[in-house]
Amino acid sequence: MDLRVVLSQYTGARAQRMREYGDEIKKISTLITEYEHPASYWYLSSVMRDINSVAPRVDVDLGAGALPATLPLGEVNAMTVKLPVTGERIIFLDSGLVMFAHIMAEAVARAMPAKRNEVGQPYLDLGAGGADEIGQRLASVDQARQAIARAVIIYATDPQPRRLLELAVAGLRETENRPTVSLLFEGAIGFVVGHEYGHIVQGYASHDNWENEAMADAYGVLLSTAAMHETGGHDVRIASIGVDFFFGCLDLVYRAVSILRYGDEDHLSSRTHPDPATRLAHHRAMMRKNPDKEATAAVTTVGRSIERMLWVVWENMRLEVMAMRAAGVRPSSIWHL
Image (cartoon, rainbow, N blue to C red; front, side):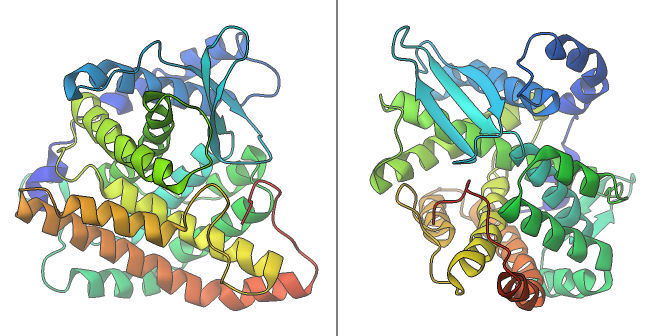
């Protein structure tokens, strides 16, 4: 599978929306509560519109759909709530999640081996030696490695948009490989939102059964990849790379939380959700059922390369997190591991 062709097909539909972002934020700021984050609300609303648009084309009935909300939840990074009187569903996204995912996508894309084809379009070259090249490039890109570590620590301890925004404006912006940033970021947030829609499709809004969570994950992949293909121009065969990226990022956060709370890395699952590695393994098992074996192999190569790169970061930051615990630092109450 030629990833050079796949990535160059990115049309930038959402990039056009970002150019209209300023006017939209001004409108949103007059509509939402003082507790919500305008930028996160805007992006959540955008993703939900896209998913609602493509759901009929993938034979998913979302019913009456849901309303968007972004708040500093203090309990989870996303959840679906059914209102007791009206029966309306609300998808809540923690206001720090969008900023965290964007910082991580910028940093990871900077460490990916981006090249340019004959017409100057960026592409990923993940053939033989691709994973090794990522490791070598990461070692030489201190800013990317440090940004990943800082974002993980902030999100584990105080996941507020203000602190993450301070990190985001500190100078990290991947300009060479924008399609990869888009692929990772849109894939991650789209998957989270699609997962919450999966709970709605299943007819309940609670998160109390790991089997139900696995099914919601499957809906998350289906809806997010379809939306990215229809509205962003991403090749649907590799759009699920954002899922690997999301679970890889979540694994680092969970490890940091586990050390800060318990002093070890053994507590990586919660009452409501399996650990990220289990969820990722289930996702990859589902991917292997795809008859397009070449596409599956390409996605797996990219996913494992991202996984390897994030693990290198973790090995370099583990001692720092342990020192933070020794100094009395504890994780945010958002994490229930």
